[in-house]
Amino acid sequence: MKKFAVPGLLSFNGGFVDTAGFLGLQGLFTAHVTGNFVTLGAALVFGTHGVIAKLIALPEFIAVVALARLAGAALRKRQIDALRPLLVAKVVFLLGFFILAVALGPFPDSDSPGALLTGFAGIAGMAIQNAVQRVHFAHIPPTTLMTGNTTQAVLDAVDLLRGAEAGKAAAVGARFARTLRGIVWFAAGCAVAALLYYWVGFWCLAVPVAVGAATAILRDDGGAGASAPA
Image 1 (cartoon, rainbow, N blue to C red):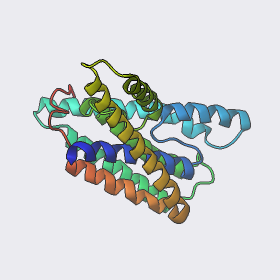
Image 2: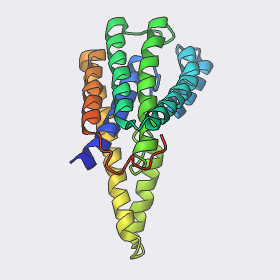
Image 3: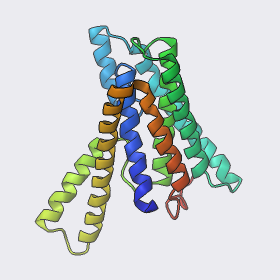
Image 4: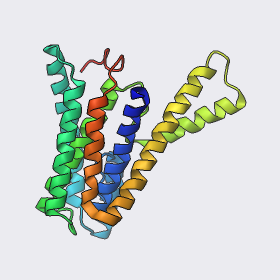
C-alpha cells in the first residue's frame, strides 16, 4: 500500500495546495513556477494585485529548494535519513500556511504584508515537496507538474496501443500506470480544494496538513532514497 499511497498523497497535496493558494491569494501558485511567470505578466499588463508576490515567489522557491538540499546533505553526512525530517519540515510550513491564512485572510490584495507572509509559508512547503520528490522519489512522476506527466502518459498510451516492442512493453505499461495515477490524484486534489475553499474558505488548508503528516508517517523510502545524494 505504501508503494502507491505516498506518491498519490504527494500528488493530491500538490493539486490541493496549488488550487487553494491560487484561489485565496489572488492567483499566486505555491508550487508552479511557470504559472507565476504567466500571471505576473498578466498582472503587469492589467495593473492588478499580485506583482510583488509573484516577483518574490521564484527567488523564495529557489532559496528553499537550495536549503532543503543543504539540509539533506548535512543530515546524510551525520548518517541520518533525510527524508522524514524534510517531510516534517514541509508539514510545518503547510501548518503555518493554514494558520496564517485563517488568522489573516481573506486577502483582497495578495501584495499586503499578511498575504505575502502567508504565501511564503505555502511556497516554502511546496518547494520542499518538489525537492524531496526529485531526490528521494525520482522513480515516480513529478507530483506538482502535470504538463510533462500528461505528455508522457499520451506518448506511452500511443506506444501501448500501436504495440510496443516486446522488451519494452512492460516498462512502458508500468510508467503509464504510475503517470496516470499521479495525474488522477493531482486532479482530485484540485477538485477537492476548489469545493472546500468554496464552502469553508481557508479552513480547507487543514486537509493538506493532515495529508502531509500521513505522507511523513507512511514515507516509502525503501530503495527510493537509498541512492539519493542528499
